[in-house]
Amino acid sequence: MVKRYGAVMVMAVLLASAAQAEEREGCRLCGMYIDQYQQTSAVVTGKGGEVDKTCGVADMLRLVSDAGGEGAFSSVTVHDWVSGKETAAADATYVIGSDLVPDMIPNIIAFADQDGANKFMADHGGQTISFSQALQAISPMGMTMPNRVNSAVPPPKGALSGGVGYMSMVMDNLKMGSDDVSKSQFLSATASKVPAPMVPKKMEASGMMVMANYGITDKVSLTAKLADLDKTMTSEMRMDSTERVTENSGITDLDLKLRYNLWRDDYYSKFVTLMANVTLPTGDFDTDFANSTRNMPGLQMGTGSINFGGGILGSMRFGDFWLHGELSHLVNRENGDDYDFGDVTKIGAALHYTPNYDVMLGLELDATDTDKNEFKGVTMDNSGGRAVTLTAVASWRFLSALGGNFNLNGSYGAPLYQDVNWYGLETDYAATVMLNFTHRFNY
Image 1 (cartoon, helix red, strand yellow):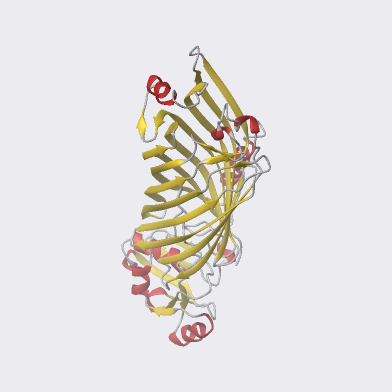
Image 2: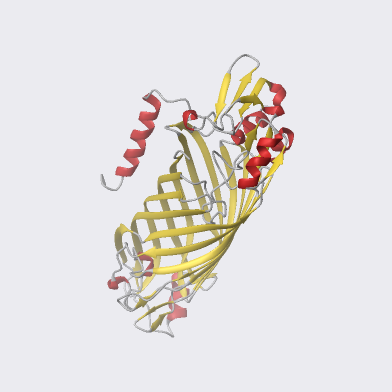
């Protein structure tokens, strides 16, 4: 128990340290240290004399937009990218869409005059916009991260996000194909085949999960996910109706995703990204859960094989909304014990609403088609199937400290439709809660 939840304790210590330590001056929104972003930092001064600093133009524009416009402040200043001199934000020229992301996205960089902007664009691309146009180009959040659907928006180079959380899933509805059935219906339907010695009743999985996402370049990012789970299967014996509980626990396979941004527009509002996926067999594969008399693939901690996949991702922003889409396929290879989990094809979409920088609310819809498993050349009939899942997601930024942001993320999903091969249990719900910290190392 101590080992399993050690990561949670580490995050708690970080939070306590953040609350007690004397912090360096951080960005009003994202928390990044201002002393690392002197070249791009901006300053907004309220009419009462209160001063807020941001790491760059994008976060300054968010503050101004939330306040109703520049008129809500006595002054708003930015730093010229070339000379570092302060200049009034309304008088500056801005470049958006260059190949540099010095602070946040969208990468809006300020210049004291048009000449400086033109020289910069000759080397780095992009286009010029005015202060009023920049206000129109901004959104409450530069990006959102879906839960079950991958985002096409790459984090900037050096941006690291790490999280630790808890997940719970319950499957407790016996199905034959797409129909809910009772025990007697199940026994009647399976009587013509090899009689199942047990009737599945309930499957539970819960435990800790950890993830990390890092921007290798402004186009390439790597995501890693791993979980430490307890799984329990409750079955009812066919002959005497007694319950049998089977348990398994341990770490799961390591899931790695490499994303490459193929295209984006200058306003950082439309993205097309390619994704490569590999799972490494860090989780245990037990043949006891694979043989024909038990056939409980859901209790496995891993596939026992190195598996590969890929897909294409798309993301688009409409004002305060983000739309994400995914089409992907994962090939599960046969492992050393002659077991082959079915390949998985997935299509999904996510719609996220960002009313301000602190909050995201959304819905995600995904459909999966999973092939049947095979063991020693024999197809496992009661495996695989199709499912359509609707998931509600939310994110809350509750603290800016230690040069970054702390967020609390949660999700709750349930199937709208599920069609299992032969028989199985339908997912009742799958829920997660995660504490996440995001920091960008100095560009």
